[in-house]
Length: 278
Image 1: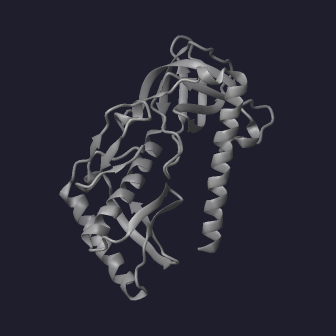
Image 2: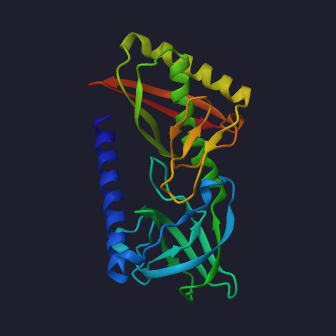
Image 3: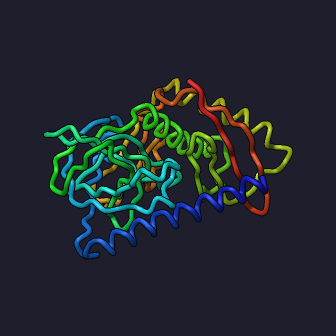
């Protein structure tokens, strides 16, 4: 757990550095005031895997801070800003989408390997397969549908876990942090669970989550705007909503089997780790 906690801290620090470097580069290349807020199409539909958008700006990216990048020195990385996007940026404990942008008129392709956001602007970073397209280009955005669907299930499972804890009678546990990555999935709560209750609670949570899936509870989203600033309240598996900017399933019957892997309770922090299967 100590090693994982240290790894989490390193990942979070690197994420902050990545966003800051991309945003700094943007400010160096553009007038800071000219960076627009991006219209977040993914707020409206988790399962919109393709859509057209207009390119507003393109600038060189620092390859030393590119996640999932190649070690090939011949590859130049760029960051593309569009007026609207279906790409979810990394944040809120959820990984960023991956995919492509292809020029509608010429077919020129840009491969998106990481997506970040800052001050309402979303930055798509990656590389061109050959020729480049320019500012003002109309592109077709396509995201990796399999990864998007998995990320939505993992994130929604975290919200359902919150609701399951309440149903189990642990109303004093308050969620503080979530990580919804395929390789590391958990929710942390302020409070404590006695050691002699952990095993029983694990079984109880799985039973409640299984019932949620069987009941097929529709997801509701109070989404008054897609400018990234309006209050967006998400209701997943519960009548109690919470602010969230992530992507989510439409119904709990899309969740699959949620297995509670471990419950740890230390220094006023309860960490519940879980996995998903179809």
